[in-house]
Amino acid sequence: MICALCKEREANKKNTHSLTDGIIRSCLNIDGSKEREKGFYFDLSNDNAFIEFNFQRGTSVEKLETSLGREVTEEEIEKAKAIPFSVDNVFCSICESYFTEIENKFINEILPSFRNTNLTDKDKTNLTDIKTVRLFFYIQVWRTAVCDDTLKISSDIAENLRQIILNHKTFNANELNHYPLAITYLQSIGDEAEYTTNYVGYTSDRNPNLIIMNDFVIQFYEDSNAIKFFNFYGLTTEQNYNELINYKEEQFVVKIFQNDRRKQLLKDFITTDRVKQTIQYFADSFSESWLNLFGVHPPIQTTQEYLQVLTGGDEFNVLQYTKENVMEVTIQFVQSKIN
Image (cartoon, rainbow, N blue to C red; front, side, top):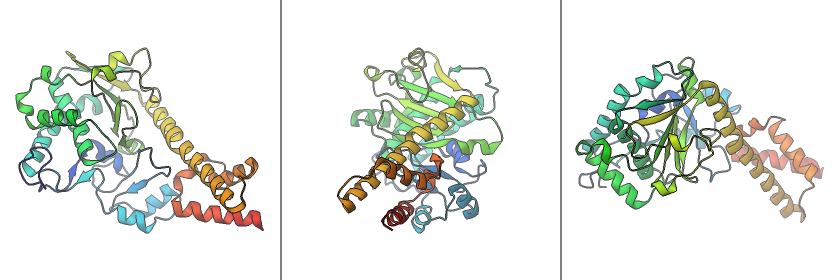
């Protein structure tokens, strides 16, 4: 296979992260540490009605099962052997060094302005090193689009980003700022374990493309005509979204989301986009199964009883179910009604 970046050399590099490991690692690890392969994460794609609760091969099974509220399945154990947000044989070692160069410059020179700085009471900050910032977030978008079908960008945009990353040393800031880009920093106050309450994932079923990578949220628009208000749980408002989108900027603005608002955003997100979606899926599936069995749809009260059994009165309990668990509960519930 030929390297996706240079399109010349053999793609011989193992374990290339689509999202920068130095940013997402503390989110994926149970205790927020920088140690590898001890965390778990959610699949954010909206084409799956079930919560895909993934974990890494070094994760403590005891802690994992406490978090899940159930035993780990064999399928999940098998999936754990894969390193999340990582690919093999897509890029070459030389191009990997380009990624590392861009990432290290951002982590060493830009990241301390966020993680090691008191941002309380600030709603935004301006960065002057536009080239470093844009290159860093461009590689997140481009690599993710190359490595995962969940996030899609047009072929022309992908090719332009490829050229920018490949030849990044020859570009200046004014040649990089033609893609509208909004970045939000989610202030995470507390010990290192606080980062594990954040998420990592991406989706392309919205405009703009959205990437959540621990304490940073990326919103990428393909051109200025695509810019419009994007209501993502209060991340921006109709009044301020335009001023937070960087486009042909002289300074790069980053929205600061204070810690309490970060917690509320994450709660709203998991409730609305995950829990409610899954509950609706369960209700629809139950109704279809009942129809197939008895020739009629179940009474509303019966469906409500079924959901009560699943949730135990707490909607968040649906996060613990695998497909096999749901099937077992459904069979038992139907049998109780027949008997």
